[in-house]
Each structure stands twice: as structure tokens, then as C-alpha cells.
Image 1: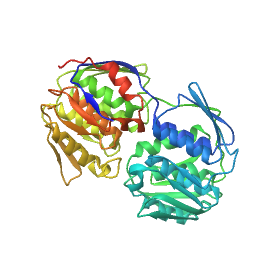
Image 2: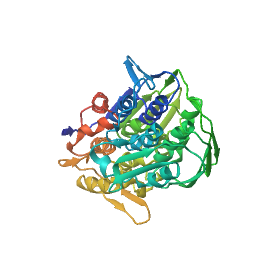
Image 3: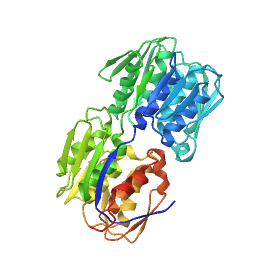
Image 4: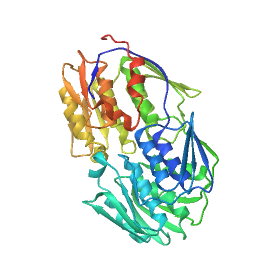
Length: 419
């Protein structure tokens, strides 16, 4: 789907949608719970709907109502194959969970997920009693054996923490106690988020400063009701838009959230935007913006929208963490550099794990592509606000992966005239 993006002022007052990161983790844990869980304020993104589909495939009854879903575990036998859609987190969460079934199963997906390497799972699963095979280091993942737990297992979490989150959720349901030694950890906030939800469902994990994590087996999950908090990742584009083109009042955000992308508030303060936060409402106002430096290693999903923000700042902004961008929905570092070049913004990608974005005038009259990447689509929408003429966006429908109502919400905020 193509979408014409018109230069515009931005005036937003909106409720931020639920977090797909929290939603996916809550669904995974509820699938393993002893009783039914009512999940309120459920996310409706493709990734979260994929998680509910997997829950059904694993034998759960999933009921849906106005503003909630109810997951009742293990009413039916688990299927032999589960499909996580295009969710990288889903693949890494549900592979260990499927390994608790004690039978041969296949975890698959579609789209770009089938080209994203997940070979970091093979060794730890083998150490825990599960044989896993891949296709060219990617999904589908075929598992056989029972995830029994036990002993000490080394985990390389340098490229992604998602598989670690999957083990943290699954191992409390294994037979034996397990110690995970973390050799390297990026995206620590996402692991903290996983541990927070595990505790809320009654699980116990002993964490030695993320160097060694000890997990007791034979635990029980139980939480009759869980409410999903609003999503800082989805809010990011709206907040950046307010900073460069007008004003954004974002409702429902938890300023004390563990979500990594809450860090966008720090960036907006650093570059000079007006920032106020009170009672779950965050207000961002346009001011003269200066170049910034930010380490996005623990918040790689912010990269595209931060690049859009930097394009509107005076000077050269530096963002650290490009090594985290290679195996996203697109190679995001390359995507940002090439698509931003089309609109007249120079982006340098160095060999030192950093990106330099030269602020300047954004030119329209061109066609850009989201490259099937939801984060790129939102970032290019932000760029178009201050362009000198309209920009045509290809793959606009990619936002459905995380924020299916994005264009509807965006359309209510733009003023439809050039600045």
C-alpha cells in the first residue's frame, strides 16, 4: 500500500496503544499458567495476535471481549506446528515453551522472520535436553525432547536478549533447577521487563546482577487479571512529531516503565524540545532543536525515529548501536541511510558501531520505501512533516506489525498545510 505524506504542522492529543512487548510476554506466561488469565487493554498488533494464535495451537482456549482476552491453558492437545507470524520475539519465546511439551514440534513463521538467524538457541537447548535444528540458521525451528532444566548453561545475549526471555519464562515450568550464566547482555531493559511479568504471575527468579540467573523448577504461574500498559515504542513517532512540528499530548504512558524506548524522553530533553510529564500524560512541544548524542544499544527500535528527529536538528547527531540493526525487519542501518538519502538527508554509518545524521532540509517529491519495516514507516512519516513537498511512501501497511491504527491516529494529528 502506498501513502502520500503531506508536509504539515502536528497537533496531537491521543491515547497511546498497549505495549506489544508486554502483551506478548503476558500471553506466553498465561499459556503456562495453572488457571485462566484475563488480559485487559490487549494489544491488537499482528505480533500480539500471532502470540494468541500460538496459545491456541498449544491447546489453550482463547476468548475475546470488549477490552480484554481470556486465556485458559491446556484445554486441548498441542498442535505439532505453531506459527508466530513475523514476530522475532515470538519465535524466541515459544521455542523453549514448545520444548516443554516433550514431543517433536515445529516453530515457524513467515516473511522476513525466515531470514533472521536464530542459531544462538541451539547450544543452550541441547544443554537443557532439547534437540533443535534450523534451516540455514533460521526458522523453521524443529525441536524434539523435553526441556528438563538442570545444571549450568551459558547464554550469549550479545545480539538479542529475546531467547533469554524465552528461557526465563519456560524454565520455571521445567523439572529441575537451572543456572543461566550470561556471557554478554544487550537490551537489558527487555529482560527486566520479562522478569517483572514473571514475578507478577507468581514466578521466582534469583538474579545476580544479570551475570548469573538461577531459576527453580516446578513453579506455578497464576494471575487472574493482568493489564497491559501503554507502549513507548508506539508513542515515539508521535512524540518526535510534536518536537519538530507542533505539539503532542500523549496519554496513558507510565513514566516509570521498564520499557527501553522510554529513553526517547531523555533524547527529546537533550535536543531541546519542550517536555512535561504528569499523571500519565506526556506533553511535547516544538522548539529549536540541537544535535544530540545517544547510545541506543539497549533501545534499538528507537533508531529510525531518532534518525528522523536528528534530521530536524541543527548539526550532526550521533547514535551508537548500529550493530543491533542488521537482523531487524530490515537491515535498519542500511535502510535509514538509503531512504534518508532520497529525501536529502546525509547519514553516515561508520565501522565504530555508530550512525551520524546530518540535520538539514528535507526534500519531498520522491518515493521512499518502508522496506516492510514498521519502524521505518513511522520514521518516514515524521520526516515528511517538515519536507518541502509531499513524499510518497511504499509499504505503508507494514505498521500493522506493531501499531495497526497508526495511520488513523496520525491522520487526526496532522494539520495538512506546509510549515
